[in-house]
Structure formats: structure tokens, C-alpha cells
Length: 336
Image (cartoon, rainbow, N blue to C red):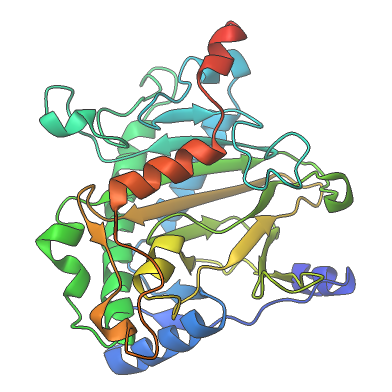
């Protein structure tokens, strides 16, 4: 029995997602497929994105090498206040109402490398990265920087198709005030071989919607990601999103839902462990710190006025990250 049939047999259906082909010359068809996906679930696949399979496999191999290190080595790279570095098990609580401890996952944050003497280095989510030494993990930094750069290019192409799907000019999000100095956050994730039990509040990752603009996700071949298209339904109905070799899974964040006046959806999702180790790699794209997120001109009318007040990107992200991550003082008290 393959993975898709196995999860169907477990009583959880599999979601059928649109595939957006970035090599297609029919951009309007791509925009139409993307719009349909964004109105329905806010999730879709991106294929033929231009990142080689060799690089994808190397990034996963290097990720496994890092997470395979002793905890004492990983804790030397504990995340800092700029959200760079290692996040241990339970560091993140995404569904505080239903989780007993926190997410059964560990992670590693990597962003755009900004030198310490650069004025921007003091802004949240910027500054120098924390890197394992070349002696400890050869080529690790080089691999991650190459992937970070290429994944950023992919997600910018996706942003242009999203603009068309919202009846905007294709380069709308390329404006200097939006994506001239974006915040692209790469996060390596490792889920231990735990069997989740929602009835007991045990999840790989608790139910949540992503905070920002767009998320690009690469996964290994172990299923686990589930989405809930209607978060207000009682009971909630969950569907698996199956891994697709060579593809990215893309979903929209709360910031884009806010920008689009809730026309496009930021969908609730979670990770359910099935007893197998699972690795994934996410790129979260956020706009410039000073970007003012306010209702897009094509998403409001007299009948549908703006639902949210304007908010600065940096203000919004600070609120959301602070709400979900452990205070760093916890680790100081524990002597790590």
C-alpha cells in the first residue's frame, strides 16, 4: 500500500491540489489555476521551478547531518533574538489551546546574511547568521546559502503570479516599498519518529496558519502535513497534503489574507507524526520591514470595505513570533 492509500485507509482523505508549472509560457493559465487554489484552500504545488534535484537532495542531506549532531553541539547554535539558529523540541507552541507541551520538532533559522556593522543588522530577522563550523559540517553554509538564494528567486516568481491572480500588475509586489529588501527566512525542520495523538494534545506541529506573505515548502517522502479548509467547522475536517517529488508545496500566509481583504485564504494546517522521522525545509517570504500592509485596491469595494487597519510588516511579525516562541530566558535558566 502506498502512502496516499495508507492515509486514506486511516480515515483522513488526501487533498487534491492544483499544480502551477513555472516553466509554462501561458502565464494567464497559471494565474487562473493559482487563483482557483487560493480561493479554495490557499495551498498548491509549484513544479518545474528551476532548482535542480541534486541541490534539493544535498540540502536535505545537510539538514539531516545537522540534526544528527549531539544536542550539546546544536545548543551551541541556539537561536538568538534575531531568530537565527537552532530551535529545540518544544521551543514553538503553535496551538496553545490544544497542545500540552509544544511542537515535537526541532528547527534551524537562516536568513539573508547582513554584516554586524550594517545599520539593517539591528532590525528583527536580520543580521549575521549562526553557522556550524566548516570543520564540523563541511559545505553546510555554502549549500544553505545557495538554496536560500534560489528559493527566494522561486518565491518571487510565485508572487508575480499571485499579483496577476489578484488583478494587479505582475510586478506589483516587486515595488521598492514591498520587496526591495524582503525578509526571506529559511527554516530547516526535523520531526522525530513520534506518533501524534491529537486527543492528548501531542502534535508534530500544532494547528496554525502561517504569519507572513508566502511559504515555500519542500518535504521528504514521509506524509504528515494536513490542512483544514474551514477552520470554523465543528468538528474540523482535515486532509493530507501528499509529498510530490521535486515540487514545492506553497501556501499563503495571514499577511496576504489581510492584504487581499480575506479574498485569498491563509489556511489552518498541522503536522501529524506517524512514527517515522520526517524532514522538511520551508522558506517564509515577508516584505520589507517598513512595508505598510493595507487592503489592496482590487480587493475592496463599497460592498466589501477593508476588514483590517493598515499595519507595518515589522510590527505584525514581532507580535506573531513573540506569541509562539519560548522566551530565550528559559534556556538561560536551564543553563544552556
